[in-house]
Image 1: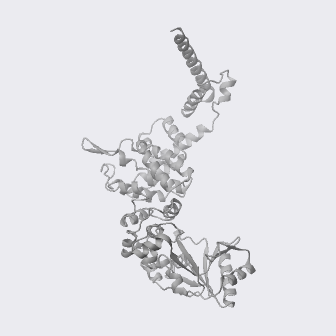
Image 2: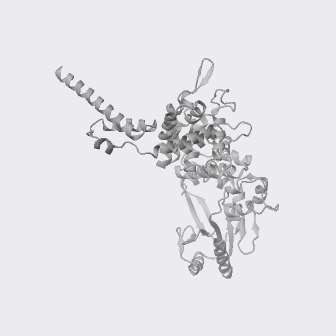
Image 3: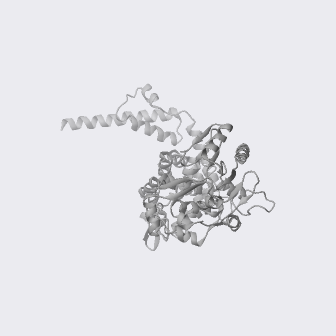
Length: 489
């Protein structure tokens, strides 16, 4: 790997200056997780969730100016503020850091002194001091979890493990290092949950308890979404992210609507899995199997996460049965409130608000097998028709291990092919109406909408044009007559 060659080259030059270079953080963790299958690796771990796209190294024992001079001999150094002691090289995915001390400042420091979890949650409320001679113990101690505090000498391969990270990897355990430092950054609560989901690890009981006491309210939306994305896109079972937050009692601020689905009953005839929470988590995990086929995986997973939030405001008992009539449309304000709290990506927001009202229709139509125009209308309304079918498969429980793409989904894909064939044929346009003698007017959009309706019904262009023109002339005559009648009164 080119990046590793660069790291080794830096390490040799640092060594000549009397220093030492280590791989650090997630890079070491993921290397341990991705060891070969000869028995030295961590079995039963979702190694595809590892994120070693970049290399992180930490340089000890030399001054920042010496490190910068070394980097100048290799490439073009980039600095992220000299006070932070973090460098990179242009064109390479490698981060080079100096060991540093971080101290909470402002109201963070005041809260720590009072003995409670952080109340000020700004990410930049830290004083940073570069200390090349801090030593590996103190350098690792500032990290969040034991599995992220592993260090590996770039030249010798020696793994330095001050806090039992290797054992926790073997035990599949997420465990914090230092309680006082841990609470200084509340994002670590979400990181614990996403690591649990991505790697299938458990969170240590004392870490769960600590996380339950940390206030997440002032985290930025961007930081929350970053952790959520990792869970939704990298975990085999994204539900673990939310189940972990639930066990920490940390759904309330950012994922409040999901918390409201806990204990929200459903008709057991259709939902033997239990409440809306259980159903949503099962759908989310099944959706993960299809996210790679979706038009854009993140927005597809957000659809899976939010599709039944409308049941919060629509669930009621009627004649002894539980119903959530029209939850897919009446509950849309709840969905929008949730989605806008989490993301500012217009594409994601528009997609979810378009697809949630449609999410029940594929399975209903696949069961009733109606005329072609019904499925055409559904696909035409959907921003991503194929995604709608994939979601329908996730929303429909797999029975006895059967393939969810047999039967109902096969019908839907056949109908999608038919819809696309129809949409590829010539159709009536505004130009066609004008060339046929229809003058543009206030009702022109109405006529184009009628033409589109005929198109979805499979009516050929020539016949559709005649029908639209006949309708337009009749409608205009009627309106003209009505206008004259009003003028006489």
